[in-house]
Amino acid sequence: MQANGAGQDRDSEQYCPNGAQNSESSSTGVAHSNGLLTESAPNNGNTVSNNNGVSAQPPSSNSNNTAEANSGVKKKKRLSQSEEDVIRLIGQHLHDLGLNQTVDLLMQESGCRLEHPSATKFRNHVMEGEWDKAESDLNELKALMQSPSAIVRMKFLLLQQKYLEYLEDGKVLEALQVLRAELTPLKYNTERIHILSGYLMCSHAEDLRAKAEWEGKGTASRTKLLDKLQTYLPPSVMLPPRRLQTLLKQAVELQRERCLYHNTKLDSGLDCVSLLLDHACSRKQFPCYTQQILTEHCNEVWFCKFSNNGTKLATGSKDTTVIVWHVDAETQQLKLMKTLEGHAYGVSYLAWSPDDAYLIACGPDDCSELWLWNVQTGELRTKMSQSHEDSLTSVAWNPDGKRFVTGGQRGQFYQCDMDGNLLDSWEGVRVQCLWCLSDGRTVLASDTHQRIRGYNFEDLTDKNIVQEDHPIMSFTVSKNGRLALLNVATQGVHLWDLQDRVLVRKYQGVTQGFYTIHSCFGGHNEDFIASGSEDHKVYIWHRRSELPIAELTGHTRTVNCVSWNPVLPGLLASASDDGTVRIWGPAPFLDVQDAEGLNECCSMDS
Image (cartoon, rainbow, N blue to C red; front, side, top):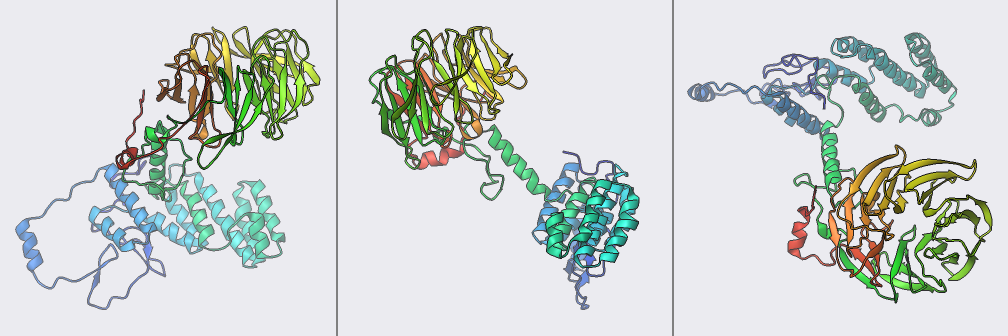
């Protein structure tokens, strides 16, 4: 943060001693030692007005003087720069609350000024709409500015407000005079001047405010103008508006960003947080606890995936079935909705259509068929097989919801419509996993050459995007399409930046051999990463931390897949070779001691 007083002498007049005199008074009030305008009060002879603008009783005896003489004169401590900054920030906040007398006392006792006297005059003239005086004040401020050339921009903003207020008042000739004789000669932002001239055609004030996107003459628009003007002045002359609130918001947001377990929407306001305690979320608020165990499958469960709207979960198993579960948003409990049968080779991959109306199921390596189900009716819409020699093990929906791409490790890579009709094909690509980007043209495919390539079906071009040193068993892409999460054989989970084509992070802890394990992004703003593991655990990392923040135990065999609910950030599902699907959520019950402990962070921060 730029130090207040930059380019100014520490002993310059904006930091006055206690005996500093008031700055120039306006016709409607008196400027106090704090540098801000307040209403003047009559002097009835019983009180005297001191330099901070607060009336004080005159001394009635020599007792105070005697006491002072007895105690000796105490030398005032010289304040450091940071101490002066804090006092000014507090003073500004108190002034915004209307506590002007308190501000006066604070400034008098500290020997500080809230802002430079020239800035105070300028502020008052702007707020009162005295544009000629405000323009004259700019000449005084010019010497205090680090960039004197900014005076032209400030003058332009002043004259623009003056012009608009004349127009709103119906003083068209005066407005035209400002435009021709004052704004145009500045030779600044001629494009904006052309736009301003068009406002002369506005028939009434409402039309002007709408076209100019302007609040109209008054406190609101002048305050907004003053905020813009302040950006050209150093903070030693005039503090940025609501500076203390800005600093507090930044502190709160930084604490939330550094909190490894924060998994709720960030509220930018200060009203919903306590400033008396540091922000810290407890592990007990995080999906680390088994809420439900789904045991309806009778063999290994190879895949699980929440729908895009978060209301359903689909699970695929070696038992040849897909089960669709309904998610109760209030209780976060799952209930069996439909069982889709007939997948002879088992179900190793599932993909929801963008509108969640359809579900595609794929089988393992020796499966040449693909099933497209209507989720609501439970009817099989399409059963696709191009050749008995195919291996259709992966699938991805085009964002338009009308097409999908599918392929496998035997060199087949197809684009098909909803009825399974072949639209395009790419020969010789041994596909391990697929993903369609949001542009609707590019398909990402990991292949047997330990890479991810981008394929464009429109111009039939392809390019290398990611290159690993070991086989890529599976991958998924973040919602914004920027990051890719890879499960790499014998290496674990890797995070790649697809735009910069660089490896961002390698996450530690997970056991990854040559089984296909599917990881996922999740939580609020996709700040977290989860993955299954061959050591029977579910691992969770914060995206920026290589060490896991949670290791979830409960499964008794390899965890093949995890899926984070995209709408309910506290709900996570995992599928395992032990034949179960576990639903993870926050701690179900919190006693008094636990509730008090929510302010303690139980993280394993690296």
